[in-house]
Length: 406
Ligand SMILES: NC(=O)c1ccc[n+]([C@@H]2O[C@H](COP(=O)([O-])OP(=O)(O)OC[C@H]3O[C@@H](n4cnc5c(N)ncnc54)[C@H](O)[C@@H]3O)[C@@H](O)[C@H]2O)c1
Image 1: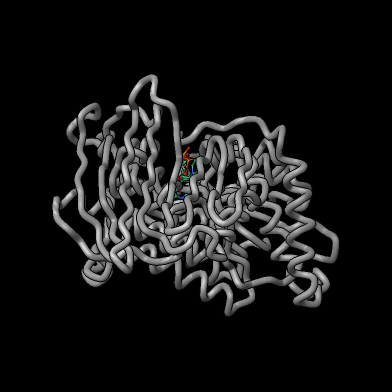
Image 2 (image 1 turned 90 degrees about the vertical axis):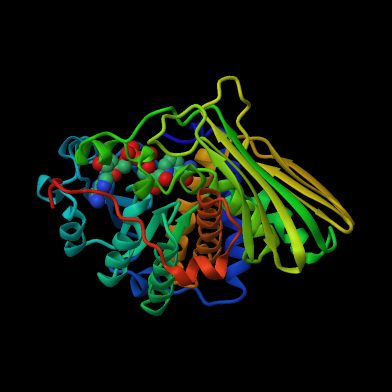
């Protein structure tokens, strides 16, 4: 499901570059701790990791963790036995450490391991991440972090608790992991395009399908994407990538959102297939945002652009990023689907072994996820909605899971 993957062909040079620049940046400021002092495994041994959610992305990312060379899969959990077995067999996980059912992840957390990778439907992320931090495990988690405002705030709290407990907590957004995007945003934050005036962000995509929520609870767990309470709708589950880039650049919470959306190609009881919104940021700075899915022949884009008083920044997950202002930069990025995850996997290990618990991916992820939830709720209600009101009302989404195995 979701954005398509590509080959990892261009990953290695970037990873090496990133690893060396990160080490240089960090090395001056802090003394590197011996790995043995910062996580349970012995020095130079691999991080023992457990996978929660063994579906499409879970199985795919399990291979990337294995290829990285710093991790050892020791446990896995999924609601469905067939998925646990597939990942368990591939990564030679002991049969006794393969867990099923909704609460299988809790038994996984009771075992001896250093870290967990959470790749379940977004509804489960806040609960599973909180339990993992409580159990003293480092957390690597898929975006989106949550489907509603209380879930976003819960992840923010888990991130802070992780820091307090000397645990790493990393949210796997790919654009923020790319060194060219990092350089471009650094330039904007340095003032190279002046004061931001307005922006636009877009996520048109051919994929996503035109399905409906199944009638059975187990069916809903398999086809969770079309179930609002499990996915958060596609603006949260998928279009968040462009909102994440946009909010990273402006580095501010939206004040309010207004707009609409609906279903023209998806059936009436499914999630929406298009949204068109205007967000307003502090100082009356607007962001025009659109996203649409399941339209044949559309060129896939995950873009955001900001106009400043002295120039412009534009970037696309699939092609390039540029800044034109007091100075110029432009870089090709190809498709970040694989390379972004590879960088996050490597930086997760670096943070664990170097004892860096500032967990810088958490706050921007809370911000962009709240931005996506705000847009969904403004569109559903056909009214202007402020972020303050969204947070204050504290509305939680609850899926109907009656009948599934506990
Ligand atoms: N580019 C990206 O960053 C990217 C791309 C794809 C997916 N994702 C994210 O990865 C996550 C998983 O997506 P996917 O495409 O692999 O979905 P999927 O349906 O293929 O896999 C999800 C798995 O979770 C299991 N599951 C459901 N509830 C569970 C529970 N309570 N405990 C344990 N297992 C449970 C399901 O049985 C399924 O095997 C989602 O959060 C999605 O948004 C991110």
